[in-house]
Image 1 (cartoon, one colour):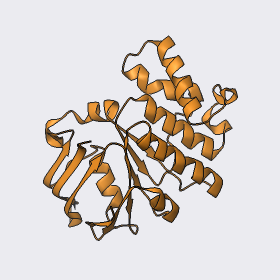
Image 2 (cartoon, one colour):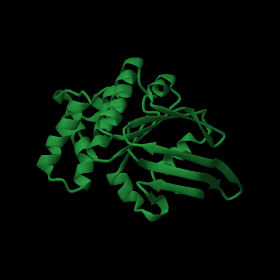
Image 3 (tube, helix red, strand yellow):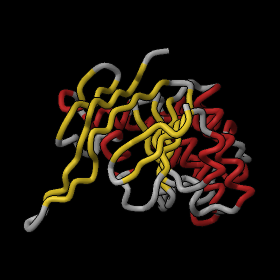
Length: 225
């Protein structure tokens, strides 16, 4: 299957004017396509910092992080997020002035996919996440939180990437919608061959993962492989 992300002894230090704060220390792990990974741990343990490095929003201050065999310092990180990795958040981060359909079409527009084709593919992705076409013309604030998160997942699929990074994706959802999102993330890994990496406090989300890592004081350990 092959490792699409590999971390080798990475560390990260936040540098302010007055002090240094070590957020990650000696983190080594790998991620493959076709699996769901959960990263658990208390607030402040380093989970979100690690996710931001995996998303290419910054680079490690120590060690090496390889994306599809290339060191992250040597790749175009904007192109990486546009073409290979997508991030979904607890707060959904949909574009408020675009319709549901337009939100899903957006990444394909950045990739210069013809509008007609992008529209057809957006319909397919929204159908895959179980949203009825009666919602496609609505604005994000006109649909529920669970529906918004499904739009965010459909938009991630539309990017055509191989990596989905999710930061507390069920945090704002009730238990019914939480179960739908957990199932969808599993399908993205097992049926669409994504590497799905979820930062979560939620035990049900972690239980559904194929591999669970735990983060404590900036160090990563395997909880379940």
